[in-house]
Length: 256
Length: 256
Image 1: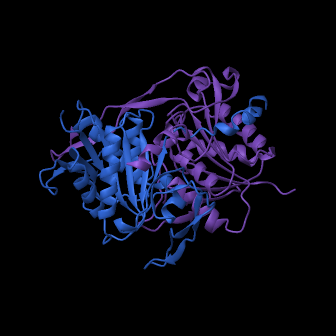
Image 2: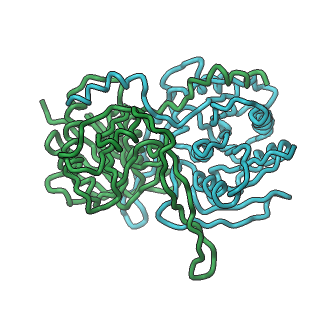
Image 3: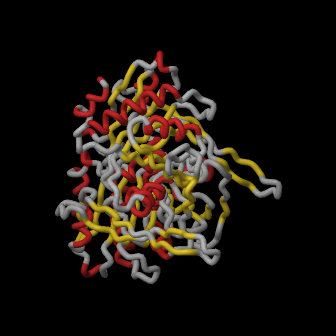
């Protein structure tokens, strides 16, 4: 059997330590093919580039591995990989990350890391987004790399076809202190925004997004609680946003 | 009772015909307060601006209505309205659009229009994204405006508290040919991408996203079919992306 083809991307940019750790883990299981943004894209959500052209450039920064840097968003990277660079090839798995910062809870919505994984899943490719609960670029990625490899290996061997998208978050703990993996649901949390307001050198006002994440419900089966309790959280995710629970109730709108 | 405060935003930019139609409809029901991007933001998904400052400027382009143009994304507009401009006020409803182009089916994921509405819903504000199934800026908005007003009015009067987010799409038909409103689920569709590949004046290659939307399943209860059959589609939506149907099955990952 030929080695699985693993598309690797991220949103922190191709030079971030997180993608290097993920490429190393993927190399032990298959053939990585890297297409990642040429600059950080955090907070890009599911942005795609439609009003201007996108550039692609092959780069030689990961020994023996084909890699391209892309001027677009994480979702653009996946679209270009599938439809241009790997046009007639089967991509066995797409992995995104390892993101510097948690994408648990509602952060899946804002996350470029998860948008790349979601884009792959929309295109029918199994995909996993990995994130580590620390913004530091000096953080130890070895526990994340260990679990990323285990989860990728298991997904590559699994025959579950219904689940195309996993949101995986690692607690910022050494391997010996991580208690294991929890498969859980998206936790309820939100951001308390507090814009920094200031004036620029020309005395014109500006606003800069700041804020703190707060946990809105301590559900023991949520990714937020799994992380807080020292587990790797895995949320099987999808892109049907229909609120089925209220569908019948909302039918009153058909008679207005 | 005081008139309801209605936050109005969009992703096509503050000068687009669509937002003008929506402001006119909102004016008949309450007090509109406009914060919209200063340039088109289509395809922005749920992007937020975190790595640079955002500018806000009050503009006088809608007679008698307070309006700001914002250098950020649609989601940024909502965050700034709620947390800075309307900090201690109750926003009764947030409406986004009317978008030039359908946001039915999977397009909710890529849509700046829907990301603004979703951001409001995350912040606990009832919200509705409106889109018209035509990219033309010359299109007749009167049927859309008629239905937008009816739906806003009904939501303002309703006591359904569980549903915070509606994805509303109008067929491109005159009012007399629209058959009514259908409350439905997100249809299954996807984009067949076909990047335009070319060279710039300096002979460097570039790629430009193109493609056609295709319907993957003709479910009669989907927004795609409602639109095709001449109805206004309303999909009650939410932001919990957990794939509950596979949650138990995926627990095998806890034992790898």
